[in-house]
Length: 301
Image (cartoon, rainbow, N blue to C red; front, side, top):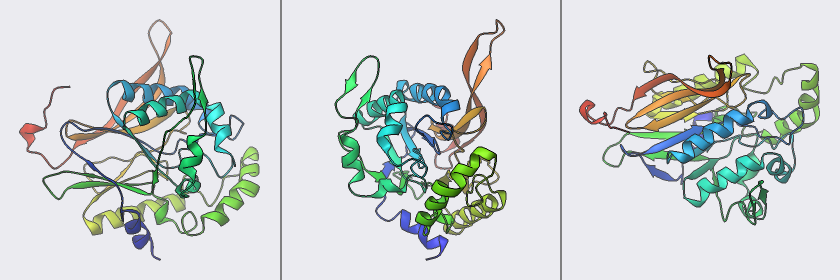
């Protein structure tokens, strides 16, 4: 199966969500939540991520996790990840209770596509200082693809993780998981980068992004992905958009869809004039979605 066929297959039977002027979507990819050890890539940015997630929850956004939310190649048990990041899963459960949570799976959490994974997750508990939830999620389904569709037109945004463009991380993901778990993972402690990773190998990163862009251009659609960890939103390249990741050295990135436009933002730790620290939200790029007349894009928050 070619990469084009694998990407197309991800949208067969994919959920379709409405895309209107009132829509509010926050899209974050590649959190790589771990179990609190040295290989937990989210650990250094967990406060940034929780702050961003709280911001989106309070403002009524629907949260879309674009795959690789949990690091299940280096960790075997999701319960250990939930225990370490219990505050994050507690907040995710609030999104879920209000019908504002959609989760896709990527190559590093491909286990989520199994039919029984969602039911097993229902039995997990997430304890905070305030309460202990008897069930983390009442019921949840993990998807390979998702479509945001404008109801009165042909325009749509198509969302996948992006590993479908990479043979090693899609068709042969079990082999790659074995190598990461038993070879590249341990070697990471000594500074050896994983050559199978599109996020760490720039040749593979460029090739993967080129394939994703080629698919979107050929299908004349807008494709939103993660996987390569390299954020991208440019009016000059409207077919391919990347949300980045939560494992950058000093920040996390996210995409926001609101008021007829899409915005790439960065959440980072900053310092006020009195030397107190705070979490800052910075706009990196934004562009209008080409589906409404210009006069209708200006909507007050």
